Amino acid sequence: MPLLLSTALLAGCGGDGEGTDVDCSLQECVVTFQRGVDASASVFGLKAELVEVKDGMVTVDIGGNQVTVPASGQSEGVQVREVTAEKVVIVVPYTIAG
Image (tube, rainbow, N blue to C red):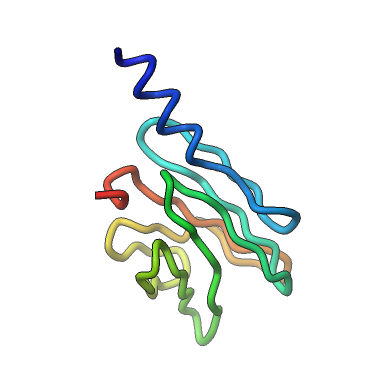
């Protein structure tokens, strides 16, 4: 049964087209968004999108809820791992799926 559950959880993760890279484990998903590209990713069955990067803050929409996180910081479990001119890397915990 645990293998079936793990497979189901990981099946709900991935990039939607070009512009995202998603790497998931059972605890978290690391999502890399290319900046300047309108792209989204599926994270534990929820749609994740990069909304904006402004004044050292990163806003992402995960499952219809916007979360604003300081660059290199964490808020509501979402962590910003890296922000460059080309990409934004966030870490989304499994607990975000509720």
